Structure formats: structure tokens, C-alpha cells
Length: 357
Image: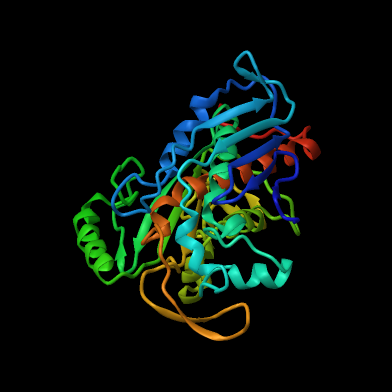
């Protein structure tokens, strides 16, 4: 199976399935002498792990990470970093009725058609369970970026028709929603959603600050193209917007272009990227995630014999996958940004970049 490695210089390769014995990763290209231990990685894993509130899947996984290699006396050595997380709360029997049936909205049918075999237990490799190792890799990349003054943060800005108006990245609530004033409305909404045995989509905002200008490699490896690829590789992400995004179709050129003065840009419709290269402004990325396909409502589908059958999905599922997706999208962002910075330093080492630290 190809496609399990992300990055050019800072590379993350992952393995493991939702109901296998463990998830693992190998990270190559990490700079040496970066302070690192399990606690650094665990902080981000704890933000992603399931069972943290009644509004997410109740699967209980500690997601305890173990560093197997690449760290000596508390610092990275520059050699491959091996990581592993043991699965603890698999309930494969919940998926016995799916052995010969394809769940609508899932990759069951496409995995079967591509490989001629599939792991039906929770989706196997296609499960969002694999994203735990992305978060682990991102925690390491974040540690490197922090030394350069680059900061990545994010949160949910829309669930269904409920939209955040006042963005506050320091807000903490069980929905990871960036507007605290919407929490009670969200509680009422999810209570109703659970009674209906349904699910809902979400939009997440990822913000990058402290970026110097000059990062990105035109023309086929533009910074926004690489970020979009990173976001789209995450389960359930169906659309990515940079800056003003899709709203540019309603704008005139006179208002969309970001005027420049001696202090910098007067607006940021470009989202901090021009011609595929960072311009020194903040980079804003919006990722839209589809509703969870595994819901308790009965539906029609096909089985492996191509017969039409009825299906009711059992098990523990997120009513909104977006609620736990922020640390995953942050992880893909920091790994992408670090990789692009390392690529830039390889070619343009003799051009000074204005890093904040």
C-alpha cells in the first residue's frame, strides 16, 4: 500500500489500523538537538483522543505514546524517530454485521475494489484512528517551529448553521468552538441531533502566525497547494479555503487585492500567500468536514454479492467529526510548514528570512 508517507525532508510514515494491536510512525528529517520526550507529544494526543465528552465517540483510548528511537538524553539525534501507540479498547464484534456489507459514505467499497480485500473492523486503515500518529508527528514539528517563532492554532468556527462571530483562540469548551457565546446553542443542537440519531458537518479555522516571507516553491509546490494537500489528506475533509476563500467570487478586484503600504498589507484576502509564496502576513486556512457517515439510522446499501440490502451501523461514533479534528489539522499544518521551511533553506540558504526568534 503506497501513500503512507507525508513530506519531502521532514517525513512522517505511519502504519496501523483502527482495530489492530497498535498504531505506529517513523519520522525522518527532524533536526537534531531539539528537546523532546513523551510528555511533549502526549499533550497534543490528549486533545485528540476519544471519549472526552458526551458529544464525541465514547471509545476509551489512553493514546499513550512511546518513543522507540531517535531521542537520546532528552534531545533528538537527527536519526529516525520511532513512535508507537497501543490500541486498548477495540470492540471488533460491533462490526461483525459489516463483514459483507458496504457502509454508505465510507471507503469500504473503494478499498474492496482497489485491493480485493478490506479490514471491515472500524474501517481498518481508512479509520480516523490513524490520525493519532499524525498528531504525534505534528507535536514534534511544532516543537521545532516554536524555536523559529512560528505558531499554529485553530478551532471550530461553524457547525451546521451555527457560526462563530467573535474568534478567540484561547477559548476552551467541549466543542472546541472559537466563539464561547455559541456553546449553549451548540448543546441544545447536539441534544436534538442525538435524538434524531443523525450527524452534522463542521468548518475549522487554522491560523499560522510568525511566518516569514519567502516560504513556498512555485509553481507545482506552491505553499497554498501543499497546505491544501495536507488538509485534504485528513479523513472527512471535503473542501479547503485559503484567506477569503470561496467568497472571492462575489468580490471586485478593487476590494480583493490587498493594498500595500510601508507598514505592510492593509487587508489579508490572500490569506498570507501570494504566488504560492508566504508574504509575511498571517495565513488562514478553512477546512470543511462532512457529517459522520456512521449513524444509527437504517439505510440501503450493497453487499459483496452486489445485492441490495438494509444496513444499520452499530458501534461508537462521533456525531460531528469536526469536534476532534482541530489537533489533527494543526498537526498536518505544522508538518507541512516545517517541511517547506527546510526545503527553502536547502535552496535559498543565502537569502535571509525574517524569523521571529
